[in-house]
Length: 115
Image (tube, rainbow, N blue to C red; front, side, top):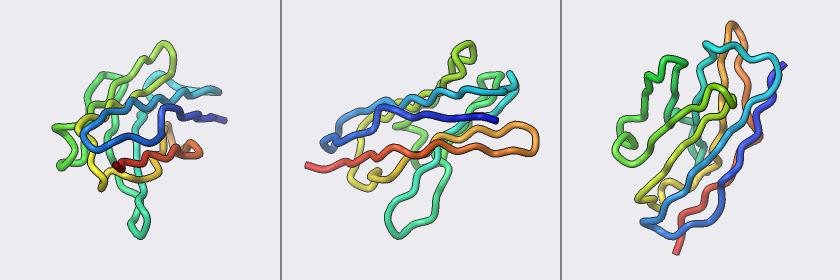
């Protein structure tokens, strides 16, 4: 079993930055894929970014210039650095881990971008 705990969400003004963190605990493989998804009101949950154990990354195309995902495998922690935040980035952000046939989700952390 795997547990994911996010931190770093909150209220930020447009143009500001936030860094989200997610720490995984439990039975975790070194090859696990970790990432971030988000869900805004009235919208489907969407992929923000993901990172493989090799360091290879993937992003939602419209976010790749503003968001950066990174990983500290020794700590089983993934980060999402968000810059130049816009009101449309407001959403609940979910940490995600995939290994073998199993997907695991954090409880979500609210990010609100508003003046």
